[in-house]
Length: 110
Image (cartoon, rainbow, N blue to C red; front, top):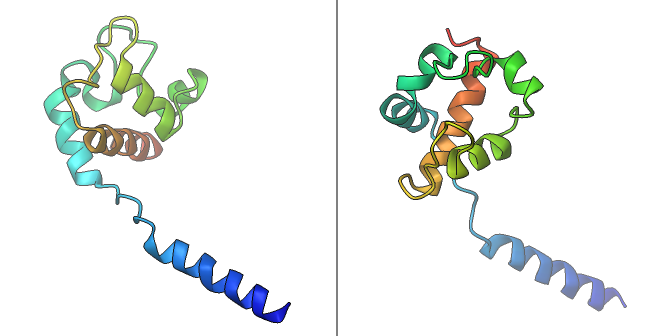
């Protein structure tokens, strides 16, 4: 029985060590992507099309956009006046810009 658990433990370690590490978030890339693709409508965390739907922390929370997954979905698929960027930006760029938006909302877009 002891050998079984030892073997199981070794197998689990092997599985963990061979998994691909998660892609690191690049906030600087997120800022560059934001500047190039989002700032025309969302400069300073604002929204020139729908002023009540800013990228400020309180508005993101009220609109259930206060997570990387929610922002990633919105950027990828678009909604209302916001175009979809899923076909134009790489998934990693969309994830980076989502992380950038959240990080700026925590700082109130200083």
